[in-house]
Image (tube, rainbow, N blue to C red):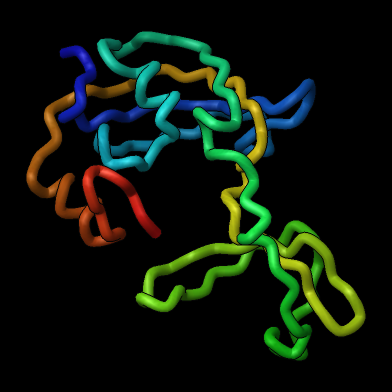
Length: 164
């Protein structure tokens, strides 16, 4: 079966940024399963997957715009240190989970710890980076109603866009 916009896909992937910077950081491929067309994966990667079959290996180069987008400076903000529990030892690179105004889970990264404030970033960790994505298609099947329900329960999907 070939991947199309209604497929449920499982891939092993490894992302490379520059010479020695990988995601996952251990440099070993990681498996992920998702429904095509829901914005779970970057648009450039979904486009590269279209028409492929199981056991296909491929490497694609994605510009930041086709991957996780450019860095949005409005998503980087300075907050009071008192917003964090006093016992939390803050370090650059830490990832925290919180909720937005609608109660959806959102993540942010600590960019810098200052004496009275903390610089945090709500951009995707790979935003603003060109990526080389190597992947192997492990499974392709038609998405079931249950697959689609899982995507709908984790997000608000409007017009195929995945919004957190």
